[in-house]
Image (cartoon, rainbow, N blue to C red):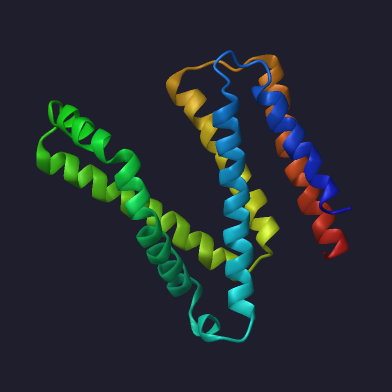
Length: 183
């Protein structure tokens, strides 16, 4: 019942993007894969925190460091192979508008803030269920999208607004049901 209560979240997101003329099925599939892998990482990390073994002795922040380092080392060859040729051209283009020091500072601060955001997520994971964390991450993404709409002055269609509202209310329903049933 608790997991079934997530259906309005999925339905709301699908409704929110259903009439978007720039909607890309490939992008949607990539976003859904990202969400699924986020949930898997949270689930396996939570398991590592609770099962006997060498990872259990690590703090949530240290476990995040280990997972991040392993993922970076595993993906570096793939990233260089797929993005390497583009990286040089994009860096040159960026340097036409920014100084090398400014570009380096922006790149480092972006990476640092992303790392800290995820480290806080691991600290939270030490205290909550992985599905709760995944739902919270979804709400965070919705909040970022809404803030972006406001800052950039974009408009949202009534159908997209309805979908977003259903997703947020579905998230609330999931949280309340999970708390009530203690699942």
